[in-house]
Every structure is written in structure tokens, then in C-alpha cells.
Length: 266
Ligand SMILES: C[S@@+](CC[C@H](N)C(=O)[O-])C[C@H]1O[C@@H](n2cnc3c(N)ncnc32)[C@H](O)[C@@H]1O
View 1 (tube, protein in one colour):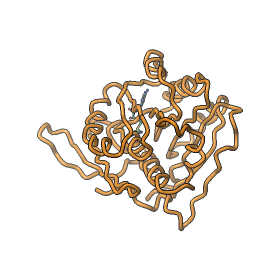
View 2 (cartoon, protein in one colour):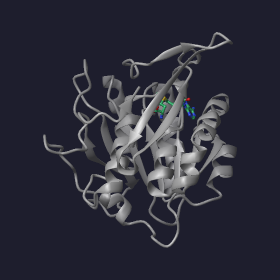
View 3 (cartoon, rainbow, N blue to C red):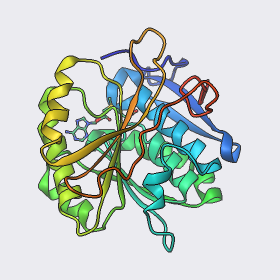
């Protein structure tokens, strides 16, 4: 797996290495601040695909024609969007979605990851209060039926994930979770996934996914420094469900959504 985004590190009293990363949201001239604990593992760090999603959401807020336009145009306007994030890590994407879309977001991850995620929710409570939308933190271990049923009591419009395809032993539990939320709902539910390809073996995940879902690329970011490929954003919908609705998007030099536009301040 390639390295996460460079960090500004500080040593705290308990000797855990902490770092703070700020995401400036241009559309609302506000900043999300995220605590990372890199010494505690990959769940406590920010990954490139999260940055791409935050940037796309920020652009979507100020423009009608972004890669996300088709996705959101099909959603109800009479109530706030209901969004579920899988493998949220630090929770930055969930916070951005709540603030920028006014959405009710449930951010989830393995139980030991939740305290840092809650810390980040609390750190951005002022921003969330100011701009509307709500965020709830919940445990969701992929494939865990009890967790999924607990979470699934509420119907979601969109499921989101960034950099969630990496270890091959997690492919099947993740797919099981997607089947639960996308195939178990009466209405059409979309999985919006940002992914940075690192290994050839990941094609096995997409091959399996295509047995159940129509998978489309809606956006491809420019390659990051030292990388041959950029983050790709996909939509997954249950097979046969309105294929072709989401128009593929190709960035060009003049487009402010391309990855060349930095979303990060340190
Ligand atoms: C590479 S990190 C990406 C984190 C975050 N989405 C981002 O882009 O910054 C993968 C995330 O998936 C979570 N994860 C891994 N296995 C999981 C499982 N079985 N159930 C739920 N979450 C899991 C990890 O804890 C971690 O937060």
C-alpha cells in the first residue's frame, strides 16, 4: 500500500504521535480539522481517496455540473440525505458530507477506531452546528450481521467508502456488507467508492462485485506524486438498476475538480 498523505507530527504527553490535518472547504470558506494517530495504525490516518471525495463534495456544493451531479439529482429533496460511510477511519468524508450536503451521516468502522472518530466529530461540532447536517458514530464490522442489522434499521440513500479495498481477506466481508445495504433495500441505493489502485489482485474484488452490481467509473483523478495512477471514483448499483444514469466524467486542465487542486492545508 502506498504511503498516506504526509503528516505534520507532534509528540503529545502520552508519547502517542499525533498529527493534525486541515481540509479547507472552498465552497463554504470553512475548515475541517482532523486528528490522526499514525502510530496506532492505518485506520487512524487519512488516505488519498478520502481527499478526492472531500474535494468532489466541495466542488459539488458550488457547481451544478460535477461528477456527483447525477448521483445526487436522483435523491429526495424533501428531507435530508441519509448517508452511511463504511470504513470511515478518521471520519473526514462523513464530516464533509454532513457539512456540505446537509446530510444525516452515519460514520462507521471497527470498534477500536471509534474513539478517535468521535474525537474528530467533537472537534468539528461547531462547523456541523453552523452548516447543518448531523453525524453519528457507530460500529460496523463488515459482514457482521448484528452490526449490519442494527445500522440497517434506517434506510440509506447513499453508501460511501474511500480506500476500503486493500487486503484481499476483506473483499468478501465488504461485498457481503454491500449486498446487505444495496440488495436488501426496496429503493435504489448507490455505493459511491473512491479507490487508489495499488495491486493487481484488486481486480478480483471488482470481478466479484460485478456479479451483483453495475459498476461505473464516474471520475478519475490525476496521479499523485510518485504514483502511476490517480484515485478513481466508482458507483455501484444493483444489477439492472438504471444503468447508464451516471455519466462518466473526464477531468481537463481547466477543471477545478481535478486532483491538482489541493484540498489540504497543513
Ligand atoms: C485504508 S483505511 C481508509 C480510511 C478512510 N476511509 C480514509 O480514506 O481515510 C481502511 C479503513 O477500513 C477499515 N476496515 C478494515 N477492515 C474493516 C472491517 N472488517 N470492517 C469495517 N471496517 C474495516 C479500517 O479500520 C480503516 O479505517
